[in-house]
Image (cartoon, each protein chain N blue to C red):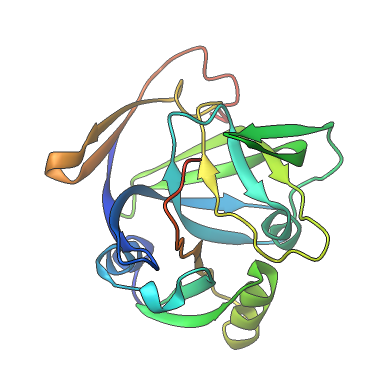
Length: 153
Length: 66
């Protein structure tokens, strides 16, 4: 199965235009589900979800605590997992995976949480991913890799 | 009702820079709620559409290295 997504042109506060690869997924928690045009990042080891989202949809927060390092900053995180549905253009096109995630804990007094980022773990073994910026396409082709340890079915 | 992928494509083509730095909940090709706190944005959406699933995202306003 092949799923096709696109880049989104985004205008920043300083007027700069950037194009970001955003793919449509559903995060399925125990309490509810949300759709997310998630950034997909081949430089991220693992998917990161902010604490408020994790709590809102019912993702377990009982995992091991650790630090997440990004460039010069670090943040407290909790290990967890989530069921993700990758949605395609046709209604019948979808792929379900259970992937490992880090839940990024909120800093006291700081509302400025980051977006949801899809990283390598559990995803890049399940799909061959091609970025075609010039054609405005991001192509996810399902693999049969046994390395896809978190696959549901 | 607009399906999920059509809503996603609407989001891709829409300039949402007036929401820079905020979370937005989208549904049926409309911004239903927005704000600095993701949970509040989601709760406000659920008050209006209790049985629906929003497209939720943060509108990033700065050059980012993830």
